[in-house]
Image (cartoon, rainbow, N blue to C red; front, side, top):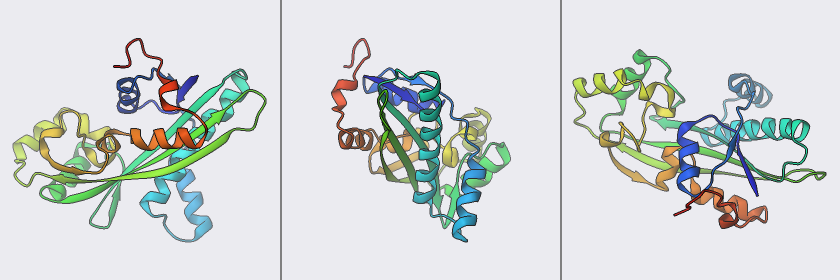
Length: 218
């Protein structure tokens, strides 16, 4: 069975590969800010972090499903989309993009605990049938070391890593030593909760181990 990851995130791709799945990848053509703004305008109020990541994760997966059905009508498998945001002290953070914003965030995160919200959207696509879909949000609490020095922070930001990830940190790469505790599925913090994806696949009638297609799933 084919698997298409509706994301260009290296972390999400790595997670699936480590779990024995070598997916196809497609970049979703979704204006995330516009989707969020439209949903909030319709409601007349901001969306909660769990609602927002689920909305965006589904929008990304649905866009790729639509294009697959047009461009590859024989596709038979799963399409997986996701989105992540970090909440701390009543604020919700996506990617910081700039060194200045990353530094500001980290100055407030030292010694604190926040929650990483990860939305998951899985579509079962079959030729000639309407896609079936399943969705869920996973959360993990992340506690940061209180003694991260300004010099360490400067070096981490200079690496470029925190600029392009939700919350301005990673747990599986250079940012890992600055994190003292994770409560929840650790893969949630990396990019997607593998246990959540397994459950959603099962809801769609797919056995997780049937998705193993790497040369050596172990």
